[in-house]
Length: 265
Length: 69
Image (cartoon, each protein chain N blue to C red):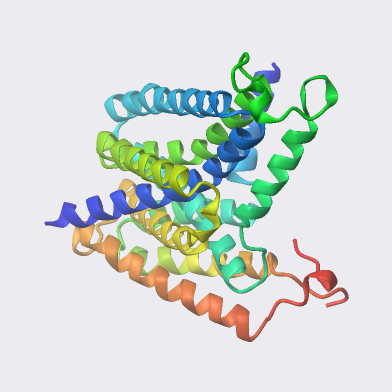
């Protein structure tokens, strides 16, 4: 019963994180596919996904097998805490208007424009012209980099959460499910990825990562949480309240100035 | 050598980046967890509160400000 709550939070955290990062990666892949040809873009994305999968196996499995569990939990907890607090900070700043929302449409337009200008031989080469020719290396590289860079954070979350609970397979499965679902939906709706409530998902994942991080750091250091794993939903509840309160505080007491007259650190 | 540097830069950007206060917060939380591990109730209350306090400080630091404020 107790481990059920941590398993549910694990699956939700990994699935949410993978969804957010996949949306960002898919935007770049679609842009590369439209402007440089689909074959190269899809091959680049598949190659990056394969490398990330190998990373999970190569780094994650030895961690689970050979590192003492308490030490692993402190290190993993600290990693999750840094990640979670950073995601929460960004989410609060975005929700309160102090940081621009992630704009998939703008990223898409910028990537297409950049790739269209960087044709072989210096000029733009439309995708259909290359449809039956050899692989477009620029499209491959851009799609590979997009998926690899966005996926690295997911790999760290999968390894961290999976290793700390000895549920690496389940964590990898949750990530793979998100990749498949976002991939299929993304290809069906093509570029309407801006409809995904990215900041809301990012907030939820930030809350879960922060809660897990504190829980595992405490566990690894010898703290006995009341109710054992049931402390995780309590921590999640605490950070939901904190996030809502901070966002409301920033909106009402410290509203963001108009973008043209503002500075941010 | 370039690979090692790039690897180090990746982790530095990833863990510290432009929010060193959150990295510091994590270090303090880990240290507190070990220091007060006999006092379970104190740890249970203190650890989330420290995280929340640093989150507020970091959020305030990252807010947009009008010039001169």
